[in-house]
Structure formats: C-alpha cells, structure tokens
Amino acid sequence: MAELQDEISSLCDRIRDYKIGDFEKFHDAIEGEMEGCCINIAVFGMTGSGKSALINTIFQSLGYPKVAVIQSTGKEGTKVLESFVLPGKQITLFDTRGFFEMDFKEEGELFRILNGIERPGDDLKRDEESARKAKAAGQGAHKLEKPPITDQMHVVLWVIKAIDIRFGLGQYREIIKYVQDQLRETIITILTVLTFDDEVQRNPNADEERKRLKEAAIKVTGSDMRNVFMIANPLPGKDLDPVYKERVLELMEKALKCGERSIRMRQTKRESPKKQVRHSECVASNLKYPTPVEHEDEPPIDRKYKCLP
Ligand SMILES: Nc1nc2c(ncn2[C@@H]2O[C@H](COP(=O)(O)OP(=O)(O)O)[C@@H](O)[C@H]2O)c(=O)[nH]1
Ligand SMILES: [Mg+2]
Image (spheres, protein in one colour):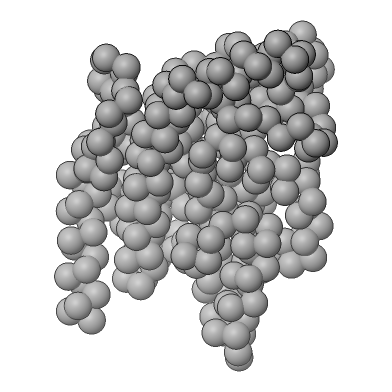
C-alpha cells in the first residue's frame, strides 16, 4: 500500500511538473513552432462511455478540482468540442460528444477534430450545415486547411464502456478499422480506456472477464495490449480508488510520451526531402490521395478507402 502511494505521488509530481520536451527532442521543429505548444489529447468514444467522467478522474488524480460536466441521464451532454487545460498549461484534454454510430458526417467531424480544424466552442453540428461544409470542402480539404501540427491532436484516448453490449458484439468494428488506419498514418497513438471496471468487478470471474474484455477492446481500437487501461470513474461523491488513480496517472504519462512522439515524428516526416519527391511523383502521376490526414508517406495505391467529406 505504501508502495502504491509512493508510486502515485511520484507519477503525480512528474505530470504536474510536466514540460513539453521531457520525453523527446524536437530537432525538426520550425523556429518558434514549439513555443506555447501543448500536448493535445482527444477523448473519443460512444455516448455514455464515461469520457467526461474520465476527464474529471484525470483532474482528480492530479489533485485538481473537477471540470467536465458528467451526464447522468445517459443522453449526450457535450454539444461542443470542449477543451480543458491542465494547470501547468502544457496539456490540453479535448472532450468530444459521442462518436461511432457512425456515418460520414461523424467521420468528417472526427477528422476535423484530429486535424485541429474544429476548435473548442465551435458547435459541432451534424446536420445539413455539416453536410454542406463537407461537400463544399471536398476530399482534399483537410490537407489544405490543416492548421499547424502543434494545433492538431497528438494522441487519442478511446473510451469504451466495458459492459457495453454494442462493444461486446463488435457492431462497429468494421467502420472503426478505417479510423484506425487513418490514425496510424497520422502517427496518432490510440490509448484504449475501458471504463466501468467497478461493474466488471462484480462478476464472479472478474479477472477472466477483464482479459476477455481487453482482448475484445484491442480488436476494436487497434491498440497494443500495453496501451489498454481499465478503470472505474468514481460515482458522484465517492473517492477515487488508489489502484485506479495509479492507472489513470500511468495513462496520462503514456499519453504525454505518445503525444510528444507524434509531434516529433510528424515534424521529421514533413521535412524529409525523400517524401517530397514521392509527393510530387504522386501528383505528377495524377494519383489522388486516399486519406485526409498526413499525406507525406507514399500512398498505398491499391487501398480502397472511401472518400471522406
Ligand atoms: N459505475 C460507473 N459509472 C460510470 C463510469 N464512468 C462513467 N459513469 C457514469 O456514466 C454516465 C455517463 O458518463 P459521462 O462521463 O457523462 O459519459 P460521456 O457521454 O462519454 O461523456 C454518468 O452517469 C457517469 O456517472 C464508471 O467507470 N463506472
Ligand atoms: Mg460527455
């Protein structure tokens, strides 16, 4: 127990004192690019999976007051993209409303968030306006309008309610495969967060069930098993279990490492002259890029991506 507390306090100190550059050297940064840069962490997942609760749990684990609004009715409360900057001002969490029903308007929204095109406070409409925007922008729009790397998302926390039947049935696995591929190409790591471990705990074979759920989860998100974190967000008025607190802090440290790596690798990729040759070759041969994100790699010609808005 004392060991756990020690581990918690040293993790907590490291994250509270975190400065960008703790894990990576940004050799390929453009002058001034890293000034005021934050690690941008996007929180995705279905409605009711515990995204907003997770953001609160993160704040709470670090000893800060709660910030995000938790929706107790089961209806989606987060109507806009909301950002929560941790007090050191080097880490920003982006709460999104529920994803993954998942139609093309949603998909467009997801990529606009990842690419930093949607900003906090923008009302993320999935109505006619969203469809019109998508249509007007065309397939290459994400590339053209894309803000600097430092304004884009750097790591994704993919939140899954462990006891969600839809997740259990793998109903949305196929659509998500596409998103996974895109994130991989953008060099964004997905960290999988399984919530509602308190409910799983009630199962007589909880450990077996956890193993099964984690395996099912990585099939959905494409995460490495080392990047799956199983937690319970505390119910209102309840304390956070130290075991989960440690796990959430480990999750955060991992997110910072992956986020820095994403920035560094994207900067390196951007500057590679070899890639630029490839780029111009592709343009010359009139190949259409199949993806809306980070196009510096040679596009796989035979891959049949569907068009994004
Ligand atoms: N038992 C339990 N309830 C949770 C957990 N995480 C979230 N909840 C509850 O699930 C509901 C939806 O949570 P919320 O964070 O608003 O989900 P969001 O739609 O993904 O942002 C709320 O009533 C939360 O209190 C968890 O790990 N365990
Ligand atoms: Mg929410």
